[in-house]
Length: 118
Image (tube, rainbow, N blue to C red; front, side, top):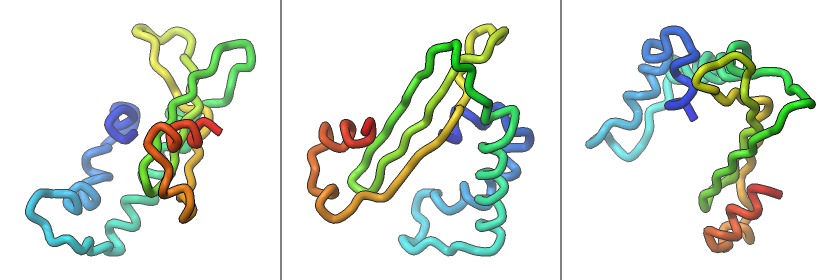
């Protein structure tokens, strides 16, 4: 998600740099979550939930639902096109996610994708 929305967040690369370092190749398997990482995560999370990213819904327009699933959790974003943007861009109206329970972790990939819709 960050790849798509980074163009809307001023100074995104600076804000996310403590987190980007956690995913570099040849790093130890154990992540060192520091106060700096926590602050960067909270700042990016806040930026994703405020204008110009998060918008109010227009009930007269179509919605787009994008979902994703893994054997750990589910995620979804409800999106809508903004008037006047050329090319048209989708902006989030709401986010949803949750961790899978023990039984759900045994579902096949297609079942997980369907569960994300529900």
